[in-house]
Length: 118
Image (cartoon, rainbow, N blue to C red; front, top):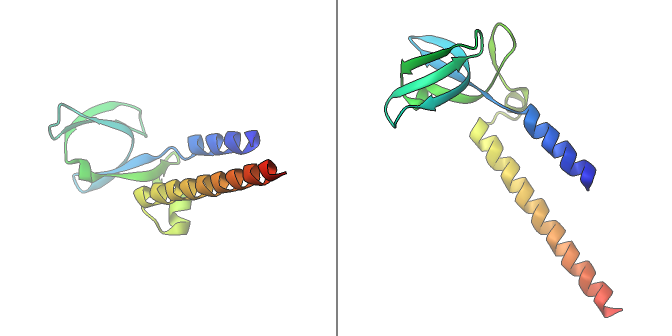
């Protein structure tokens, strides 16, 4: 069980997503962003030069689930293979975790009842 928890933890760090930003008809890869006081001003850190820029754009112009490979911004391979958006992929992982949790709980209860009978 320890190995599974460690493996899931390590894989979750590996799936950290960057964002694809559409600005002035160009695409940029963004490491992180923050919305300033609920306005349309957004601070972004570009992956190419790690500099902070303050831009006026809508949060919808940022799409999660991309990675920067040094020259281009590519969609994460797991999202390409599954043909899912980043949000749907996270939802699928959450449902899988819930299902495995309920199955584990069911069998733990079943085993404890069987042991109590003896």
